[in-house]
Length: 152
Image (cartoon, rainbow, N blue to C red):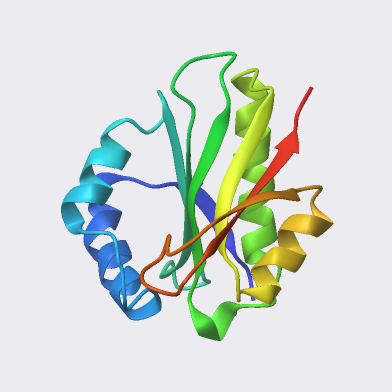
């Protein structure tokens, strides 16, 4: 199966927001949050989608860099369950990291749920290190690990 990647556009938002509700049941981003983020795509944000052979969206990712030379934050990476473990998240992570390099970011950061071992393994394999923990970040009793990767 061929997977393609492209910039997220406003027409993608209803689909992504709907999938977001399925994947992140406890704390999905709203339609408004996605609209706000994508409105800055290509400026201070870099959002992309992964599509299957039928051009259906099967994953998305986004990052923010407020200004050239500042740190980049990965805000989201998600792949629908039926398409996981196929390298899609890795491809999007590398795309976000490459964009951070173009922004001359000294570091790139992300948060990941403490119990999400597959995601942590992916990030560690791409050079990220755990630097701290945020208690209750994803809700009561759901801690986040903060991870970073030096880019300089």
